[in-house]
Length: 105
Image (tube, rainbow, N blue to C red; front, side, top):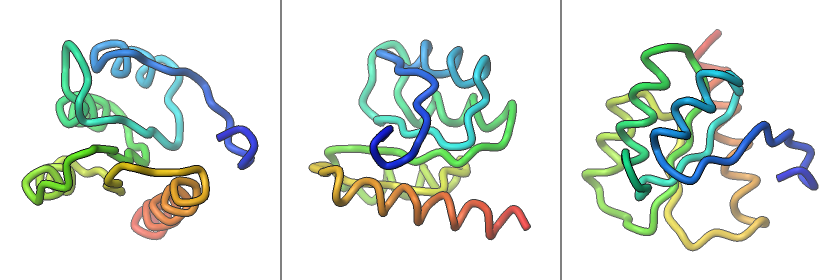
């Protein structure tokens, strides 16, 4: 992430910690796995987005259409199915962020 010019403000090991970190740091872009302990990424993203606007991109190993639909319903601006590499992840993050900004205008 940092080699791609992105500033990483924190890493969380579970959904509850992700919510706390996001509410404290208020990043512009949040990359979050759906499958996390304590609180899944969908619920964490919903809580974050209820407090402030950010570009939330959800990451999952499961390309289940239901997850993609739920991600859109809560306001996520991206949905990425694993596996990913730096070469595939960074362009997808940039695309999601550009889409987020075009919707905000």
